[in-house]
Structure formats: C-alpha cells, structure tokens
Amino acid sequence: MLSSAHPSTLPLIELRNVVKTYLSEAGEFTALKGINLQIYPGEFLGIIGKSGAGKSTLLNMITGVDHLTQGEVIARIGSQPTSVHTLNENDLALWRGRSMGIVYQSFQLLPMLTLLENVMLPMDLCGLYHPRESRRRALELLEMVEIAEHANKLPAFISGGQQQRVAIARALANDPPVLVADEPTGSLDSVTADHIFELFERLVAQGKTIIMVTHEMALMPRFSRHILIQDGELIVSPAATLTKN
Ligand SMILES: Nc1ncnc2c1ncn2[C@@H]1O[C@H](COP(=O)(O)OP(=O)(O)O)[C@@H](O)[C@H]1O
Ligand SMILES: [Mg+2]
Image (cartoon, rainbow, N blue to C red; front, side, top):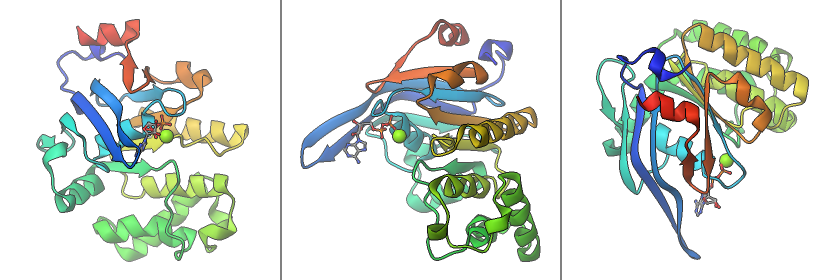
C-alpha cells in the first residue's frame, strides 16, 4: 500500500536523518548514514538488504532498543507523538511494551522459562491480561505458530526454527498494534516460513502494521511496500519516491 493512498494520514513512525555510528576497539563504523523513512499505519513494510547492510541496526533505531548517534525517531502509536530517541530506558520499556511486539533475529527467549512461560511473561509484565487469561492466550498463540505440543519444554530442548516461532508468539502476546520482526522466517523451512508469512498477512488484514526485515529478495512482491538498504543507505525505488508526494 503506497502512502499516496492516504495522503492525509500522518506516519506512524518517522525516521529523520538517522545516523548510527558504532564505536569499537577497531574504531568507528557508521552502520546507518542518514536514514529518512516514513512508515504508515496498516503497512506491511519489507526492509530488504544483504547481510551487513544495516537492517538490524535500523530496526533497533525504530524500536529504541539501541541509541541513535544523530537524527530523530518520532512515533505516533497511541494517543500522543513520542520522540523515541529522547526517552530514558524506563520510559522506553513502557512505551515499547504498549506499542510493539519485537521478534529478534536471535530470538532472545529466556532459557530458564518454558515456552509457555516465555509467551506469558510479556502479558504478566504488562498487566493487560489476567494471569488465568494469559496462560490460555499463550497456549492459543503457541497453537497459532504450530508449536503448542512443546509448550512445557525449555528453549534449549527445541530447534532454532521452533524457537523462532515461539519468539513470534511472544511478540504478539500483548496484541500490539505494531509488529517488528528481524528475519522472522530465516530459520524456518519453506513450508513453515510460508505459514508464518500468511499469518503476518492476516494480521495486516486485521489492521496491524508490520515491519519485517529479510534478505530474501523473493519475498519482495508480497509486502505492501518494500525498501532496499545497502551499506547503511536506503536505495530509493520508484515506489518510495511516489510516497513522498
Ligand atoms: N555492536 C556493533 N559494533 C560494531 N559494529 C557493528 C555492531 N553491530 C553491527 N555492526 C556492524 O554494522 C553493520 C550493519 O550490521 P547489521 O545492522 O547487523 O546488518 P544486517 O542486519 O543488515 O545484517 C555491519 O557491518 C556490522 O558488522
Ligand atoms: Mg541482521
């Protein structure tokens, strides 16, 4: 869906000239070189690029999981606009908990909790669902990603692809308006990957906004819009140019 279809709508998330420079023992490395991006409500946005292009770094700027070096990230999720880059860790965690579900590239399941408990945790932290309800809902979510039969196992006892599906269930726990997913099908076989993609398409049809990173060019036509990233810069496609006007 091009934003030109809804010109009066404000972006849900807006990145203004975002620069990210990592400092390490090897010196400075600028992974994002001034990103301007507007994401609109209801989009299924694909962020596509090769390994090392800056995709995960870009997601970390959108979610506030990491700090930007320069620029601004403005989000309009909920009642008032939020300058994500100015929030302290505490406010960031609160804002993130209300606004988005995140599927990390490395899953980040808690190793000492069962799969069911991993999915229940965001609900129990946020308090949106009664504890009795959160258990039932967690099971439903595990069923949705086709992993419910392992609900009581620890993450170490299931495969990477299975962990990835649990991470997707967990990201949906609080029914967030926005889902941010970093290569969420990267560890899945093609049939399961397709099921997950179809699930995302259903969620978008229900009104969610999904931002998904992938290095699979073949997925390109299935997003409502895609952007390409290379060496920390967006490659402006004709469609993206259209959306500016
Ligand atoms: N914490 C870090 N410190 C230094 N360099 C990093 C760090 N994280 C990522 N990079 C570098 O930034 C670039 C972009 O990384 P990343 O965003 O993870 O790429 P992608 O997700 O597209 O594979 C890569 O060259 C990577 O080596
Ligand atoms: Mg990555």
